[in-house]
Length: 112
Image 1: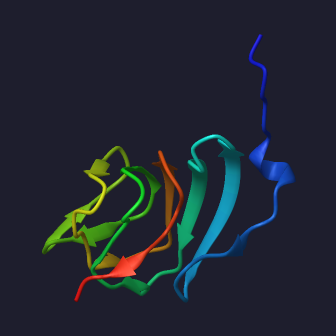
Image 2 (image 1 turned 45 degrees about the vertical axis):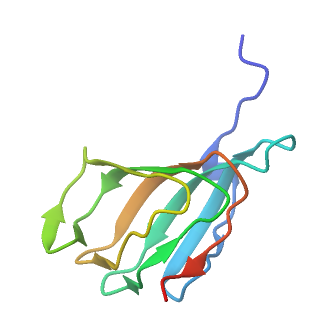
């Protein structure tokens, strides 16, 4: 038996770090600050290039179409951004849902 079981339908969407982005925090590791989240991007949302200075990011598209570096991706695509590596901008061509894991605190810093 798993020691933690979460039903995402019982969770509310919360405002994300950018307009047009919402989060459902599925799990939080208190020791590392890492989180597993569902992210919802509204159609037309553009997330500017950024880094996560304290965490590696792994994102898996569950629904929708997402553009990254001029290529449009669909469900089944996995992205990985090592801690401190710039990525984005991300463009949601449709509403997009991704399952995303940050293995450290979810902090965002714009690319300068």
